[in-house]
Length: 349
Ligand SMILES: Cc1ncc(COP(=O)(O)O)c(C=O)c1O
Image (cartoon, rainbow, N blue to C red; front, side, top):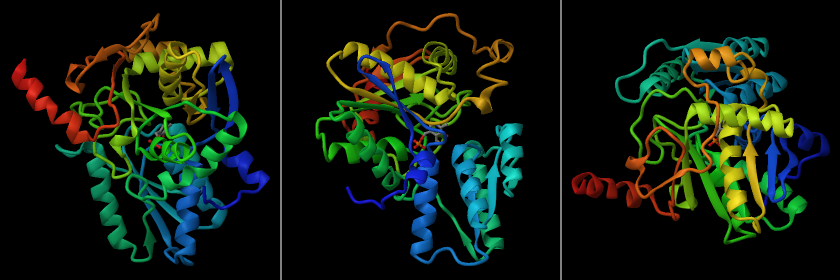
């Protein structure tokens, strides 16, 4: 694996704590996973001469990639403009602004492409106003998946054999990047991706989503479908309850995508007791104190659940997924290979 060596302080900042959650299940608990791609993308841009004195970094995000950029841009003295939407929480907005970021909110979704499309449109306008700008483009920049070599290396060094990696998918960077680095050592590694209902990444119709950080309304270039052996769809209520269990059982206070990945990873590890399973836990829980960790908010938003399903529903086609935890054996096929068969399925039914 070729990547730049990191110093010990960088490792503490960028790499996760590795925690044994069950006999054969390890959690890679990040302070902020997106620091890895944000840092690698900025480092590469500096080296390749895309960032100069006075360059404004411009990106569209309402999540953790924006926070990672804000932390790094503040440290490096770059101007940062983030285009976001009303789903951004006040605590994050305040934190970004404290780091010196200009946060611009778009108010209306596009009929096709939703808020993500509207954000991209507004970002293009701002880019036109700033000739000296750099766009990190986490959805399409190959340095996003390319930034996960240090994580894969750390996992191999610490755990030896790894049989299965489980994680959520938003841009696809973390799972596609880490899987491909790990497969250079363990070619038979099982890669299990976790998505949510209302996300079009694996063939479901694009709809409003309560669970944020995973899923997408547009297809990122960084998502390589043929990486995955299996795909799971988890509802917001299931992910939130699993997040709370991760806190109660393992004392890990993490965000909702960590809960979604933990639910799937724990089940997979129980089904395969001889396999060494690693689950990616992308961010900490403090940002979600008033939501995921607040029963009143969960009830008000209809996402409170008393019990988790004991197993996912096995389906053979994405269109069979309803609103509860489901899984498909993706078998490393392309999107077209799986979703084209939807036309067949629709006409067959
Ligand atoms: C909290 C959180 N978890 C998981 C993900 C998914 O990671 P990736 O974009 O690498 O697919 C994201 C993406 O933004 C995220 O913000």
